[in-house]
Image 1 (cartoon, helix red, strand yellow):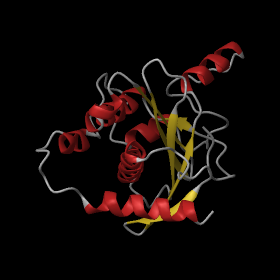
Image 2 (cartoon, rainbow, N blue to C red; image 1 turned 30 degrees about the horizontal axis):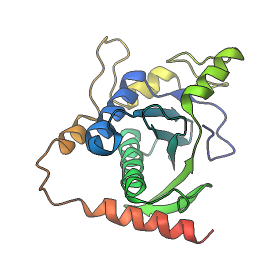
Image 3 (cartoon, rainbow, N blue to C red; image 1 turned 180 degrees about the vertical axis):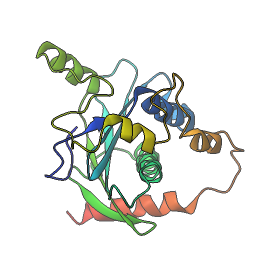
Length: 212
């Protein structure tokens, strides 16, 4: 997973528990389509960019379909947790379209820009197998420890600061549940009127991909 911004060199990973919550949301939302398949999640916080990746790999399959979402932010201005929710929702919208499509040819292989609630969001589709990539990294001795920054993180922004921004107390054993509201939405009555944002988001992304 590579960042969109060329200036994004320093990063800290999203906590494993946080990524686990995202997996839970997707498994519940797309239970029928995923079945016994695997949902892979990854995420990084750069000094000026939020990067989230959600992938699906069929049971016993090697091909993995991933949607990566990037949102630029200002450290002292933006609500990082709110933007993270926006990134996850964008990935969910793309997967809704993915499971309804006959193939993956229409999805953008390079970053495509679209607007959501006045914010520019970028998305792209990849087929990187996370499990195979992780094994390759292990063999090469590449290993990123949870809670440690990758590269030379900005001195005034520590991984603990990022966790605090996400509503996570680094001194507590149990993480807060910042995605609880999203999971509650998943478990609501299936007859509830669908959110219009998701439909609009899908159309915007598909329209952008046809312009390339």
